[in-house]
Amino acid sequence: MQALNKQTAVKAQRPERIIQFGEGNFLRAFVDWIVWNMDKKTDFNGSVVVVQPIERGMVDMLNAQDDLYHVNLQGILDGKAVNSLEMIDVISRAMNPYTQHDEFMRLAEQPEIRFVISNTTEAGIAFDPACKLNDAPASSYPGKLTQLLYHRFKTFNGAPDKGWIIFPCELIFLNGHKLKECIYQYIDLWNLGEDFRRWFTDNCFVCATLVDRIVPGFPRNEIKDIQARLGYEDNLVVQAEIFHLWVIEAAENITLEALAKEFPADKAGLHVLFVPSEAPYHERKVTLLNGPHTVLSPVAFLSGINIVRDACQHEVVGKFIHKVMYDELMQTLNLPMDELKQFAADVLDRFNNPFVDHAVTSIMLNSFPKFETRDLPGLKTYLERKGELPKGLVLGLAAIITYYKGGKRADGVDIVPNDAQEIMDLLKQLWATGDIRKVAEGALGASDVIWKESKCNLNEIPGLTDMVEHFLRHIQEHGMLETVKTIL
Image 1 (spheres, helix red, strand yellow):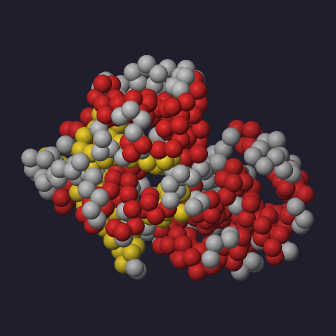
Image 2 (tube, one colour):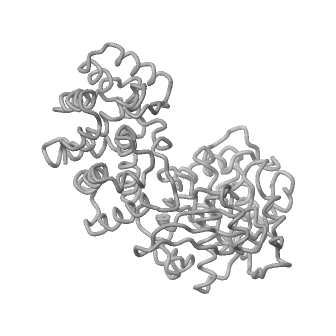
Image 3 (tube, helix red, strand yellow):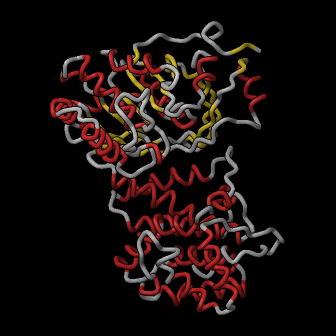
């Protein structure tokens, strides 16, 4: 078997046009795969320089393979199973700014670089007042980026055409707005001047984005078979689902048309949308993908089902999932119904992925906070629009409360909830009373422990306490599966 490098595989040479902060599985299976497709199918003709955002990372492993690696896409496409392997060659080099600081700063001097893309985790977009302009480099990602931007401004004497288009991919709502705010804070902290502020404001385009692709990462259990199939000893194979979506909200100082022209991902046949606002798409994803996940997991587990795919295909729980998605949550959104139905169909294909055994217990970490952000808004909107409570969502909430009781499932499997200790302690105390009404009222009313984000007492929602109590009692007396049947 051959080593994977530019001596054993063909690697194209393209101009460096993108700086990418982050070298992890998601960016390599999502952004770099998208750039690879643009290079193949459009005249984009660009490569990516990877910058390791923290001191310890994977750039040495990347460079050992001359930044070549394979993406293994798995899933359902047009009703057929797909299990593909494609070699991605768009990364020109990868660097550690902590040990290669001069080389890092010289990126700002390259005239053809136009884009900055990042995924530095949700905590990465944060202002750290301890950062200094002459740090080598600044510890925070926004600090590093401001250092580069200021050096570029000085290098090209504030030339309007040398600004950058910036796409943060961190999983934060309005991530671009947050990043821009941090950069302005560094401009003020470091006294970088009004000329630089004006150049950044007028000539740099910081766009909020929403990314969506499940990336399991390195296929540890299958790597030997994959390497044999490839004929290469690739130690950076990354697995991902075939579905992908990138919603890019145009910054206020650039048009959608200009943005799409410069970054022609849509022309490459990719599911990349340039929109005036990412908000409805963020709401759609949270509501129709994350929302069903949150309630199907305890319902499935307490029905004796361990894998998401099996839950979707179950004759009873599958109907429950469909009801929650189509009859309840979908009715609370404001996008065109045909678009929502297509997205929901794609979500179900993803849930049914034959290559991914997605354990329902892995979704149930911190179930109460997830219900609060993903399902509670839909519950309230449904009640407001329909004049009645959505039974599927309420049953899902009752299933979470039941799951947090702990103990054993009917088949003897341990029920092991995992959440903030104060939530775990509260539910334990409530269930210890033996009074189901107290359990319902206590869980719904815990605005200081469970419902911290909204700070609300859910007992004030008309009819909710009675319905939750009813479902809790039915689950205790007849089991989860029989309770699900009552609402179908």
